[in-house]
Length: 205
Ligand code: ADP
Ligand code: TYD
Image (cartoon, rainbow, N blue to C red):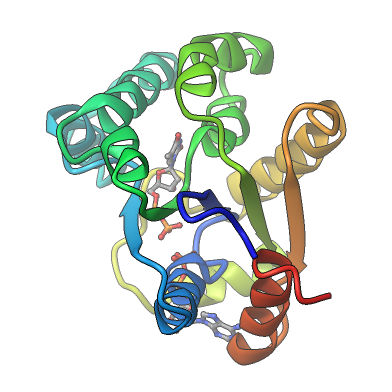
């Protein structure tokens, strides 16, 4: 069984099934009597809202300016009242939709990856996840799923998604001694994926 205040992050390319799996894990942990809180990045704070306007292409800036904004939003999300540290300190298990691995993979399309990692050092020091769960899906499938959502966001193009997925795999090798990353085949059914995640999180295998 995991700690009562574990910090678990879900990662993957756009449309890989993160929201679906977070809901399923939250329900499973709640059923075990655990206190679970779900959160996401970009956050709901001021910097997160600004980021959403860039993602929706309502505002435009250079992608190199976006990298420090994501890092700033993360520190805000960690330290704000009701933020990640507050939730963990109140003995909640926190499930977060995206965290710094997203920055490393997405912002490294246009920025040096090591620079992005450095920008996020303080976030890593303040709140390092106990587990990152990466939902792995071929980009062609995820793009089909995303298309059904309507408006395409800043990074939702096949060539970008392919580069981002490659970046995630570069990171898994680069961070293998530093971060606890569990890769799941996200082509399976939602229930099969949820079962694998439950087995990992509740250590039943
Ligand atoms: P994300 O949060 O990563 O963007 P979602 O959970 O919103 O992904 O899923 C994107 C779309 O794919 C949704 O329409 C969802 O119903 C569907 N979906 C999620 N998981 C699966 C799965 N395992 N198989 C098929 N479709 C899925
Ligand atoms: P999200 O709403 O999770 O998108 P989706 O449901 O499609 O997976 O995330 C919004 C977008 O922001 C997504 O394209 C990934 C991007 N992003 C970054 O580029 N860097 C980051 O650090 C984070 C947290 C998200």
